[in-house]
Structures are given as C-alpha cells and as structure tokens.
Length: 408
Length: 111
Image (cartoon, rainbow over all chains, first blue to last red):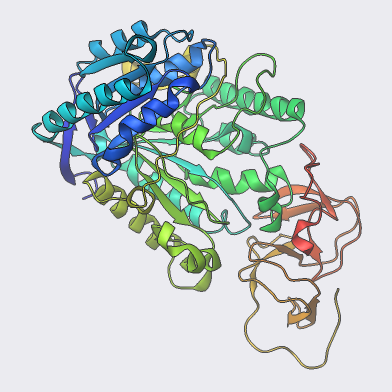
C-alpha cells in the first residue's frame, strides 16, 4: 500500500519530480548575502529560500553543491545574486540552471546600482516567478520517485534506543516500497564498519565503505576531535563508537546499495551511505561544523525530505527540502513538542513499539511529500550552511547497483 | 555511589539491559541525585548524581581493562573498576577508537 500511495507533485524538465516549488535566491559570496536575504524576506511564507556560498575563492565542491541544489526537483526557479568581483563562476552556474529548464536570472550588485536597486529588481523577478509557479500544472508522484535522507543531531543515550532504530525500520519499509534512502555519516560509523561491510551489495563496495570510515577516523584524529559534542556526553554517550552505534541504526537492516559523496544523485533506488569527509589531507577544518552542512549535503544527493532524529532537541530545518523531527527522548519531547513531529520516546515509556513509530514516520513522510508542512517548516526554519571541501569523484565500486541490474 | 538497603524502592527499574550479555544498562528516564532504584539481582542501587535518560549504569562488576558492551557491541574499555549500579561514563570508560578530549565533556553527566 505504501508503494501505491500517490500525491500531487511538480514535474521538472529532466523528468524528476519535486514535492515543493521553491524559488531559490542564491548569494555567490558572503558580500551578496544581505541583498539576497532582503530580496527573499517578504516571501518567506511563499517558498522563497536563501542558499549560497560565503567564500570569495572558488571551490569545485561548493560549485557542485550549488549546481545540484539549484537543479533540485523541489526548486522551480533560481535567482543568482553576485557582488561582482568574487571568484565563483556565476556564468557557469546560470548555464547549469538554464540547461535544466528552470527560469534563472543573475543580478550583479556592482552593475545594478547597489543594494536598494538590486533588492527592488530581485523582488520584482521573484514576484513574476511566484505567479508563474503558482499557475504550473501538477503531476502525481509515488514512493518509487522519492528520496529520503536521514541525519541525527543533538544525540543522547536515547537516540540509539528509539528514534534512530525507528527511522531505520522506516527506511526498511520505504526502500521495500521502492524509495531511495540516504543515511549519514561516515564520521559516525567509526566502530560500525564491520557491521556495515557485511551489508554491502558487493565485496568491492564493502571495501569502499570500510575505506570511507577509516578516512573519517583519520580525519577526526587530525582535527583532534571525533564527531562528538558536550551535549552528547550530558545525554549519556561516552565514546564515539557508542554514538556511532546509535547513528548506524538509522540505516535499518537492508543491504547497502552504494556509497555517495555530496552531489551524487543515485540512478537506482536503494539504500546509500553518504560520505561527508573530504578526500586528501585534512584541510579547511572540521568536515561538518554543524548539522546544517550535512542536511544540505543530503539534499544535494536528491533528498526530497530529511528525517532528523534528536535526543537533546535540535530545532533546525532547512532551505529547499522539509525536515521532519523525530524526537528520541520523551523528556525532551515534553519540553520541545512544538518543534517536534514524531514522539519516538513513547518506545521507552511503553506507549509504542519501534514498528509503530516506523509506520508513523512513513505516513508522515507521505503527508509531508503531499504538502503538509513539517514542524520546522511551519516555524520558518530555513537554515543553510556551505563551506569549503574537496572530493575525488567516487569510483565504480561505490555504485554496484547499475552493474547488478545489467547482469540480472 | 552504591549502597544496599533492606527496603526495596517502589516502582519498576528505570533502565533497560539492551542485550543479554551487556555489562551496562541504560536509563529510560532521568534519576534524581541520591535516588534508590532496584538493582538487577534483587539488590538496591543508590544513584548519587542527577543523570539524564540515556546514561549508563554498570549491570555487573566491571574490572579496569574490561571491554564494556552495549547492545552486544563493544563501546570502549573501562579505565577503572566499576561496581554494579555505578555510573559508567567518561570518568571510567574510554574509546578504543578516538579518545574524546573536548573541553566540557569530561564527566559532564555528573553535573
């Protein structure tokens, strides 16, 4: 029945379908951020979201991230806001968006008379796009066309008992119904690599998964910290492998189809691990300075919606894709219920089983895909963070699924 | 941290043992400082500090150098002897992978 569920959606020229019709206002350097924010400010309730890259020096990863986000199926139109003298290639990004069939416009502040006039021009363009997006025909979409990401943030000792395994079981159901599911992150798979490798679709992929986790461990040592915050310890988590154990359970129990890096959009449905740790020497600091970086990376891999499990109680959402909060800790839920979508802590208090909560999560994913606002979405959370990284392209062993299909 | 008492505390144990061989249990609700809770083998554990849900207590005696198991999986090595009912955290358990040296995490659960 999950496999047969349909909801209204937006069809894009490339054949992909979106669950939101966002106008993205994109700043190409921090110096253009204020202007972009001012352009979008009056239209927050109407799906106008601000994303961008603060750096003045160009970076292939950042270009790839913004390319993928501007052509994400949830995005209907794109306004690029450039200061004018930054290194980011606005022409190339505009070409990528135009090629995707989306309306795109670039405003260069230095050529448009400054802040006030650029804001006025930008708002006028946005209003035109909102009118035409509102008139667009809807199509229908089903689970087989949906990509769901998952992240944990503000984890505590309850995360691995309730919300994370419940999301894992919802992933089993969603993948079983034909969806694509993406879990993170290699920094929080340290200690779980042997279990992960056993679930790999091929021995070559198993090797790639172990190598990615080993890279994450090396990177953590170079930074001097694993992926572990003070609040994790207050919440009863002691070691990175203990935190990993909880994070790992978000992946469910099915076979792992492949390994992605930010911006890789899987061709074939299945379960994928997202490698968020840069390749090569440790440069540019922490791989992920906060959860928002990773949410953006999950969305860059095509996630239409993101399941965010939290024990301590995170309140963030995201630009481009709705974030659904699954709260692990019943005491946190009682304190922060207005920010939470699912009370997985009922598993601890005896009010629900893991399977009950997994089914509730699947139902909510379908409802949010069909247009219901998630808690963070209705509260106006549109966080977005993008920094510097560098990645080598993934190798063929990371994507055995198409080969398996060709053989089969 | 741990004391025996002739009077068993009321209510059910506020923790779960996630796998049969685990040498720790996990709190399913917060416990107040100096709260007495039922132990695993008919004894009584006195939890000295305020601990939030998700914290771990020793289920059995753990020796320094023992691996600590949760859900049947090793989560680190004990750095000192731990008695049943005692809080298991950064002050007596260390990662076998990457030690956590972040300021503010040492014994944070004890606050």
